[in-house]
Structures are given as C-alpha cells and as structure tokens.
Amino acid sequence: MRNKIRNNHKSSIIVAEDDQTTSRLIRYNLEKSGARVSEAQTGLDCIKLLSQAKADLLLLDVGLPDFSGWGILSLLRLTDSTSEMPVIIVSANAPGSGLIERFGPDDYIQKPFDMRDLISRVSKLINSRGVSTTREMLPVPVGIKIRRRVSA
Image 1 (tube, rainbow, N blue to C red):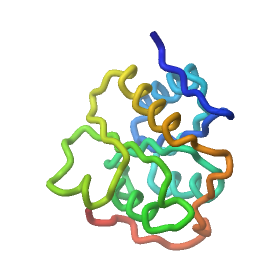
Image 2: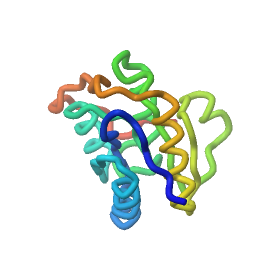
Image 3: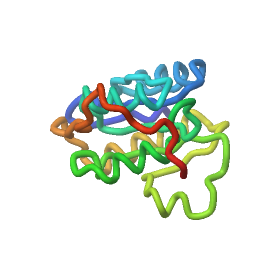
Image 4: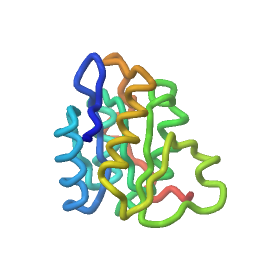
C-alpha cells in the first residue's frame, strides 16, 4: 500500500541531492504520493530555493559538492523562520558521533534505502506536524557570499 502525503494543501518538498538519478527517482515517488517537489543539486541551489520559496520539508544529502549538508542544516536551525522546518538527512555514510544530536535533523535515512520507507517517513513528518502553507522562507539574500564548506 502506497503512503499518501495528506495535508490541507499540496506539501512542498525540497530535495537537495547531487546525484541526478537519485533526485529524479525521489521526486517521481514524492509527486506520485501527492507532494510538490523542487530539486537542488548543490548546497547553493538549496539555499537559493529555501530563500525563494516556502517549503514544508527538506530532504538533505550531507554530501553536496559545495556545502556540507550539516552546515545547511545548522543554518536552518539557527534561523528563526526555518528553525522548525522538518529535515530528513539522506546519506550514504553513517553519521559521525554526535552529529544527529548536534544538528537536530528530524530523521536520518541511509543510502541505499527503500523508497517506500522514505515516503513513509516523509508522510509521517508532514502529517504529524500539521505543516501549514504559511511556512516562512529562509531570509538569505541570494547574492551574499557564503563560506563554501562548513565543517561538521
């Protein structure tokens, strides 16, 4: 049985994943489950999307080519308007000691993963939080210079 992402509106999800095949597969399955999906292949693209559009959830690969996913998560958690945004970390590697506690993602899934498991986790987070369409955008001017790598 396929999980549906149920809410009062079509949930908006950002998928920050540098592998285009993986990103497209995730997007396809999330859209089939009822979500609206935007994709980012780099950390900078992810930050731009977060500053330009309201998102209900972020699926974040920690191994993006230009920024650490942990650094992006840290930025989100330190910003009032995005500190409560649900984030699921997606990674091929097990998290280092203390990273989950330090950065506070809402969930963590290790690659390779079962797509039904990912959809189920996304669905549970969105449905349990009663995510609203009034979620704020990340207040980051697109033209600012950001240090390329944030050490985790």
